[in-house]
Image 1 (tube, one colour):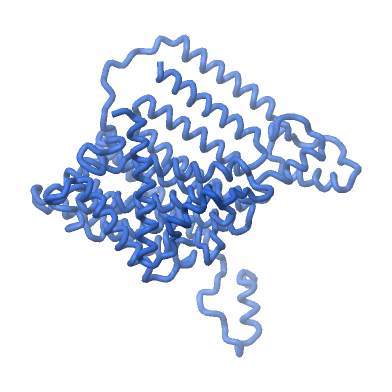
Image 2 (image 1 turned 60 degrees about the horizontal axis):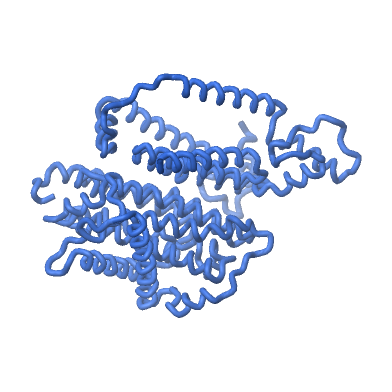
Length: 229
Length: 302
């Protein structure tokens, strides 16, 4: 009975947080809602006795991915959603939060202040015109999956759950899935090397800048490194 | 015992440990508030800045303290004296360090101030640089004990503490702990003289008290975990186990704080360079070294 209550509560949190992520205007809050949804799913894993999976879920999705997402969001324009909110108000779009945001498809408003927001909106609208269709398709597949889950006669497992899954996972990674595991390592190293390569400033001076007595042409070359082919 | 008693025990132990760290640091000449100053925070006005994100601002200290209290459940004080004896206890402990950073980021973001926002950026950038060395330093004892359970790791050290043949691991773990709990040489995200308190800039009163307890408590927990991993946990002659555990933790915390005071505060770029160019290669070397030694050393010594 307790398990059912915990299951219902965690599922409600996961779904509500995912829905709130779609509705909120603030990108930072959207990131946090996604994080809460993923943490609630980790709670579901715990409920199923898969504590290793729950820990991995929190580590990868909260620790690694989401902190980086929030970090990048804070670098963007308008992470708190305030000017988006004003834009929506000026364009007279009624409805719940970001769900009511849509591409402006009429003539620009007469008021020049509103027209400024109109242009911003056209450039950085966070939504597409297909949103209602996407919602419809998503709802239909959710209903379909639910129907399949309810109508299928699931076989009951007889084996007891493993109390120390980490040992099992370790053995599998070092035997059956070793090639995939090591291949992933190579892939990640290649990715890191590529990121460093791209991150290096192009044309950064290799030697210290020329002394003041050097001819002016040299300084010009430093400013436009690609100019001479 | 029932889970509520375990949770209450972990929380109470955490608060006492945090106050002890604050006291020890003050005795050593650090910039920690005295107990009286901390107590006066209870009566101080609880300010919320104008245009703050109120929910995040108010929930951040509670989130910080809650994640730390959860992490405290996985530290064994004595034989069978542990909040939650999970088979993957150490992994859970390391995992719970990242929601703490989320709380720090929320605090800096929600305060609607420049200093807090800078602190939040720094906290997030530092997470990626200390998490890897911290995890790699903890892998040494895991390889030797062949378990992620914190009690198993302590039991495996009954004949020889891991610090004897993994000293590099202990040093790396302590440095990464200072990093992870935003303490002195690595306290750029919440430094009071450098960034007007950084993440904590807008906090006052009880919320500031909660945050200070969470930060000190996190450091105490990391030191306790270092004792569990490298210094034999509750093992020791004459005295009962929990006393040994507490004594070792306090000594290690005092040593770490005293050593940390000998270094100037590192700049942001220096911290990242130190982490990626020194700590990470050293921790990889430690893993390789421990792997070879674990195969060579006779089993009774391990």
